[in-house]
Length: 391
Ligand code: NDP
Ligand code: MG
Image (cartoon, rainbow, N blue to C red; front, top):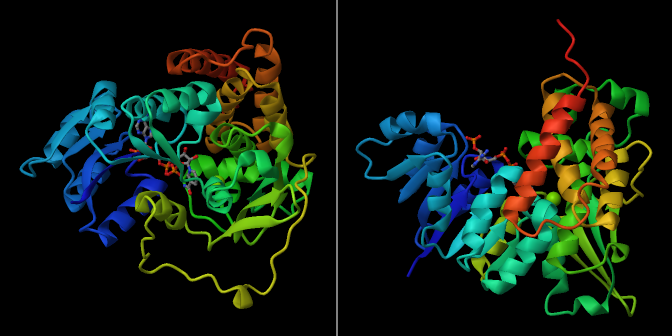
């Protein structure tokens, strides 16, 4: 019997890596629903190739284009939020949650409350509403399998071990494209320079977050919720080769680590395998002799203030990560549009965190509350951006 897999964010970077694995293991998997944002043509093409049962786009206005592109295929489709939620709630053995940003919260939660097994790439679900997600995962008996490479490596390194026996969990950062750059050079960096990730191939938003190290900050918050571990036992180390992804130092001094080539298909395959190991065709084998040396260095919070801000939000807890994430999404989009300089991102995020510190203290009780905070902070942050200069 084949397993039905639904992919939320199917046309994105994680979505495509997932599609590649599903195609490689055609007999093992069947494709249930595929969800995209607004690209009707890309989604329709993927749905036809993968023989999906249902395709949904978030952008309601793209509905007619999707229907036209799928005409005669026998694939049902829809557009708008209700169609996305319908896709997320369809019967599936595994739901890959790979929408980018806070837009991923609702569909991911819709699958979670049906007790699905979720391969979670959308880290924002845990950053914005971690308490509610972990509570509801337990309540509805949903399994959350980490796709994020660091967390997947940690889960594998943890094995059957107890988190209470862990002295420290460490996630690695490649350091991004600006690892060796001066502050002045970073401040003048263009969006394409920031998006040029040295080791991973990913979507635009996460590329910029990797350059600012905000991605590592989001991942500390993600790890805190996933493994129910306090901030004090979480750490980040820079490792430019991106081969060691996560390390667990046990209380007796032993360290177990998760290593793999930087290829997101490795953690995705681990999730899709549900305990079995899937072969990855055209995967690169890790050759440590060829790699030669693995190097490590501390993360520099002076040049990468987003990491400091995220650590503070993690320690603060409550709604601080929700606020931080919303401001970051607005600031990163403005940076990509060329409206603010690189350190303008940290500036907007820090101001938003200060501004909302008193207003939003306790952790959002549910997804709706998280999204209400998200919307409020987005509106404020948009206003807080410096005025766009006429060209
Ligand atoms: P991409 O930007 O490449 O893809 C995002 C996907 O989400 C696309 O399919 C996009 O559709 C879809 N989408 C956008 N907005 C909506 C919406 N409102 N409703 C439904 N779907 C929407 O992102 P990535 O694949 O890089 O990242 C996805 C998630 O995985 C993020 O949370 C990221 O942090 C996480 N992640 C990614 C890693 C990577 O290597 N890429 C590594 C670890 C985690 P469309 O194309 O039509 O816009
Ligand atoms: Mg990661």
